[in-house]
Length: 223
Image (tube, one colour):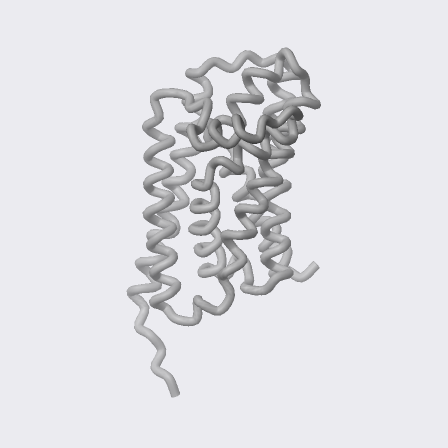
């Protein structure tokens, strides 16, 4: 495999894993239902959620191709991603309660009335369009940094990596909860979210530093 394609896949794999960690409706569902409904049920919920998340990720990355030809465009998207990561990181770091449901997702779930574990995970992410916003900003940054190339092969491998990364996290969580019967309190969940928030703030720091370095460089004159 070409190193550029491998880089796109690994970028997606890591991003998908980390983005899935913050405590939300999917994690809370697995933790609450794991001990009684078992490993398979939890894994199917995770599979459904990453299926919809991969669709949102694809929609977020599909429009980015040749728009990063100027320093201004790169700087604009990196600044947007920096702000988003700071907001999300601060939000997760300062969390004081476990968010176990999303109002929009709850309304869609009531209308569609999913009867399987897979569709439950799928619908709960479908009802959370904020996921699309997150992946739109993140994928813009990855392309701007050339971690993902603006071609369909690289984008496809990135989305595949996101799906496998997210599914790896939910499978691990399902195993810990349903098979090993580890007891997870709301306090532990909040600390999990805070650690994820700290990681997002660290990523924002790296992006901010690179943005400053890029803006400090003098543009190369044409000709």
